[in-house]
Amino acid sequence: MPVDSGDPNVTNLLAEWRRGDQAALERLIPIVYQELRRVASARLRNEGVGHTLQTTALVHEAYLRLVGLERMTLANRTHFFAMAARLMREILVDHARRKQALKRGGGMTVLSLGDIAGAEKRVLEVLAVDEALTELASLDERVARVVELRFFAGLSIAETSDALGVSTATVERDWTMAKAWLLQRLGGVAG
Image (tube, rainbow, N blue to C red; front, side, top):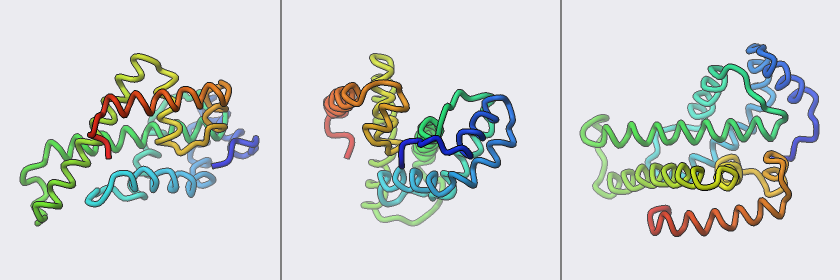
């Protein structure tokens, strides 16, 4: 995803949305839809086999949540995709929690023991990563945002730097620290 180069359509629509024009979001989505699908597809690829959410469903759910937000302070394309990625993370975590709650007998789908064990492991991994990121945010909000932007939104170091308004060296340091902290915190949980 390129760093926002001042795309007037995206920037203007975001400004209109910030001023309270909900219809601006509806005009924005078709412009950024394919990029949202790419972000969603990348997130779902990390979920592994047996995940029941599809790319289109994840994009549409993120859209519905975006529409439900009152006013946003999204300055540019990068900030927009960062918010979309955060919402996709929330959707995946909510989905994992529902799946965990229904783990016995909910869908009545016939699965092998290996499929069940693999699917349950992925649900627990999603929840563990979310819990770890929440804990990291309580220790250092910016470092947690770096993880969210790099991992969930797929932003580069430069794009993350732009989104957070810090230097690329700061993002690189935060990213290195966050990976080490998450590895220690999660132990062998995250695959």
